[in-house]
Length: 404
Image (cartoon, rainbow, N blue to C red; front, top):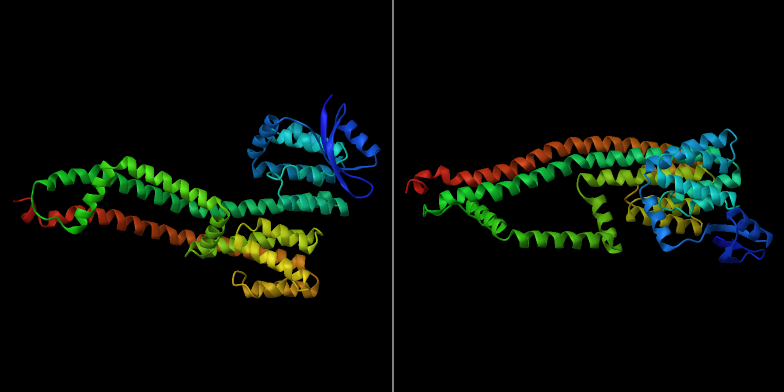
């Protein structure tokens, strides 16, 4: 018979976990409830290989799949379809095999007596903590359909924000890559031909020309070492960026770098405020909402701000007071948050402020894009033009070099 791993709470409130044998998930849940236990988590005990395959399937699920699922579930729940049945129907209709397995697992847990939010927690890479927190609030208030609609709207806005930021960075990255390839081609294929022309002339070449010739010779003769060093450097940077200290450093650089820094700050602020607005409007406690906001802020500096706000609230402070003391949150936003707290309309004010920040982000992205295009053209012109001038400088003194 199948074996099921469980986590449950007994009548005294103590948490217990273990493995039991039952015919199916329903029987296992019934056996636990018969013993007076509240099921927190229940799943069939599988081998490590099965777990790895399941996690691999989870990684391939995109945010668009989750948004589409959320919209479908919101409609079905609002029309009175039971949750487990709705999950089964959506799972049968989806073409994504990974999503099918996830929905089947969630449906089995729900049918086994596990809360929907608890079942979602088993898939943290697919359903973020904000999603789980809102479902927990909906289970208490009985407004799951409305909450699902809010979650889908939030994720759609977040997706659009991410697309805008990525779109603004795509052009400069492509241009920089193209410029690098052009420079390498000139150094590897063009400069050696000029070097042969000037080699036997005996005249001293201009300093820029000699420097380029030396760089070209180094690339041509020592390219294995250069590539090895570049790979080692790239791996070192990658490992450092993945480390806690590296993530903190890169987050600090992103929000302070010229031109792109203001755009990153507005993106982090818009995401944070929209998350907090969604939490407050959904009935989630302020402390829990701030902790979730810190987790989804997307930047260590902003996460630290929301953690500090949460700590200050525990001491009796308002949300707005700690925001006045940070340079990463404009004073006008802190003032609007303060007004929302005084009038008891914090959720509405945060939604409006988040919308304002998102509009400013759109304007900032357009501004940065319009600035990047001419800047990249100028940079490419200076680099390629500088190489061309270094090659042609000896030609300007042809009477001294070639004619000898």
